[in-house]
Length: 72
Image (cartoon, rainbow, N blue to C red):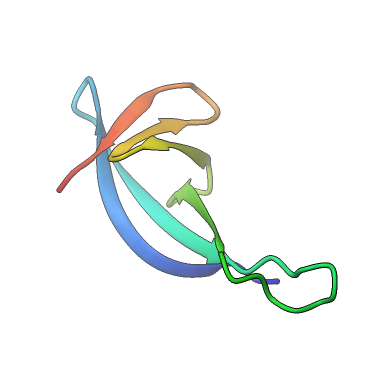
């Protein structure tokens, strides 16, 4: 299945740097081939680096471990 861009937002690290983050959703097929009811949500920086969601508005850059906070 293909991931679909469903949102974009900016996040800031402790030093004030701003990161553009893209939110994607992908439907994972069930064993019988039908799409699951709950899509998988993934996050990446605009340049393609993976971002881990820590909960609420907190995220972590997977490559460097830098924590970023979603800007409302």
